[in-house]
Image 1 (tube, rainbow, N blue to C red):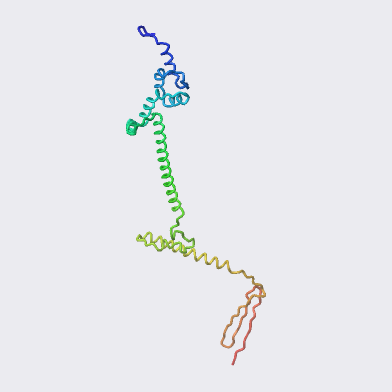
Image 2 (image 1 turned 90 degrees about the vertical axis):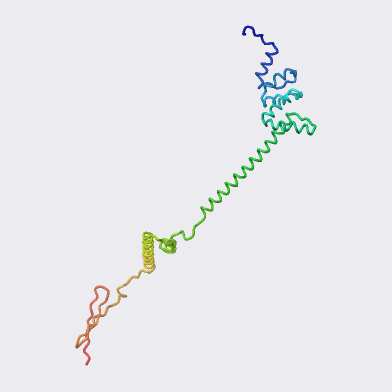
Length: 239
């Protein structure tokens, strides 16, 4: 202890101990108001609320001024003065604890409405964004599909007007390749559609050649099949 400083009394030591252990303080029914006025001002909002909920006695005479201070700290001096003015105009007096709780509940409702409004706006914006994305993905532009064999699919290239000679040349090459590919495809389909036929020796036809001379006519008949004799027929001259 410093020289010249009076030692703390037992009462002061008890008050200091209570202030240091406010977080563990519960009921104060047996504590006189004079001591509570020195102890409770050191409480936080949650500590004061907890002590009052655990105490059966009415602590308004001690805590009303404390709740007024919390009201001013949380909602501003302007709202505190407005509450005092309304109580004077109506000729009523409310506990600052009740005013604090009513103001807190009102503020929660306002915040809940604002949160719901923001949530609805976000959902609407998200739905509109998704609908735009779906429309872009599902929309098929006209004449955008090209035919592999040069059909109507190249109309988007043929119908468009090009002023550049390079683009015109490219268009002509594309059309020419498409037409050539289409012709090859048609020939391939036509050949594949004709049935194959086997020709037997008995069904083979012959080829006849006629040679005219001044005094006679010679007719030569030659079969198409292999190893067939050549028949020679002389025709007498006609007089």
